[in-house]
Image (cartoon, rainbow over all chains, first blue to last red; front, top):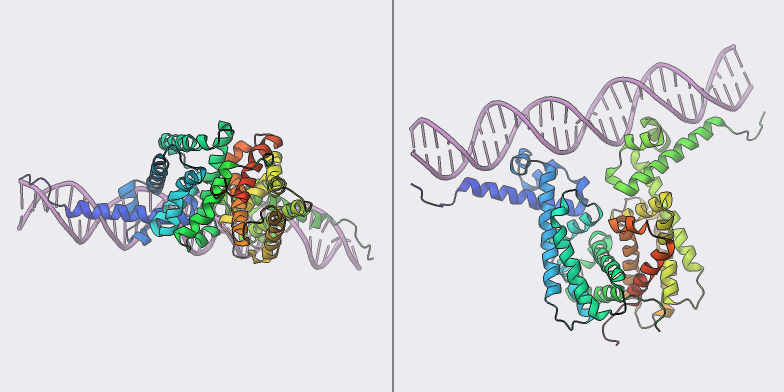
Length: 212
Length: 212
DNA sequence: TAGTAAATCAAGCGATGGCTTGACTTTATG
DNA sequence: CATAAAGTCAAGCCATCGCTTGATTTACTA
C-alpha cells in the first residue's frame, strides 16, 4: 500500500546527520574561518563518519558553502526586518539600534546565534566564490539602511552615506570576531546597547569638525 | 689579525635571506592569515630553500612570529608618534585624523606598508600566543589616545571612551581586511581622509540621541 | 521472509604539510 | 693550501589533509 507518509526512520536519521554536520561546520567556521576547518574535526564533533560529508553534501567545500549561505540569509533577513519595522520618523539613534540589533541580540544570546554572526563577519573578509546568489539580499539590505538614514542626514550625499553604512557594518563585524566581542558576550543586552548604539549612530552622523 | 670588521660576505648573504623570508612571510600573512601560510610558498617567493626557514628562524611559526612582531611594532610606533605630536588644543577631528593617520597613509602607499596594516589587523582577530611582549606598547598607545580624547569629550566617562577607542581601532582594522579596503587603496590620500576621518570622529563623539 | 534502498563504517589512496638530514658550496682564517 | 664556519640544497620522513571504496547495518516494502 501507499500509506502516504509514515515517518521513515532512515530519512529522519539522515536529516539529523545532515543538520549535525552543518551545525558543527558553522561552529568551526565561526571560530577558525574557512581555512581552519577540517573534515575530521567536523565529523568528530557531529559524531559522524568522515564519509558522511561526501555522502550528504558532496564535499567539504559544499558543506561549508551551505552553512555559510544559511548563516548569511539568517543575518540579512533579521537586519532587513529590523530596518523595515522602523517608522518614517525614526531618529538616528533608533536607526542605529535597529541596524545593530541582530548583532547585539546575538551577543546576548551566545551559542548558535553568535556563531552565525561570526561566520557572517568572516565572510565579509574572505568571501567564498559562489556567493553571488545572495547579492540581491545584500543590495536590499543596503537600500533599506539608506532609506531610513537619509531623512536623518539630509546634508550628506549618498556616496558618503553608503561609505558610512559599510563602516558601521564593518565595525559590527569586527566586534563579532575580535577578543572585545567575547567581552561583550558577558554583558547584559542593555549594557551592550547603551555602549554600542551611540558609537554606531555617531559613525552614521559623522563629525566634520566644521559644524560647531 | 683582528682586522675588526671587513664585510663578511657570508653573514651579509645570510641577512639578505633572512630579510627576504620575513618579507615574504609578511605578505602571505597579510593576505591569508596565519593558517594560510606554507613553508614552501614563503621560500618560493623569497627564492630560498625550504631548509632556510629552519636554519634562520627555527620553525615556520617562529618566522611568522618575528614578522608579526615587527609589523605590530611598526604600527604602534607610528600611531603613538602621531598622537604624541598633537597639541593640547587639538580638536576631535584632528585627533581622529592622527588616530587613523598611519592606516590611511598605508592605504595610499600600498605595498609593504599596507601588508603591515593587514597583518596587524589579522592579529587583532587571531592573536598569537606569544605576544605578551608588546602589551606595554598597546597600553601606551591606548593611554595616548585617551589623553588627547578626554579634553574633547569631558562628558563621557573613561570606560566608554576606552570602548569607543577600541571600536575606532576595530573599524580601521576592518577596512584593512575587507574588500572595501581594496577600494580605498585606489583612492587618493585626500579622498580617503575626507570620507574616513568624519566617521572615526563621529564614533569617538558618539550620539546618544538625547542632546538635540 | 526475502529484497532493496538509505545510511554508516573502517580502511586506505594520493597529495600536501612542516621539518630533518647529510652532502655540497662559499667565504674567511691560520 | 688546509681548516673551519656559514650558508644552501635535494631528498626524504612522517603526519594530516580531502576524498573514495567496498562491505555492512538499518529500516522499510512486497
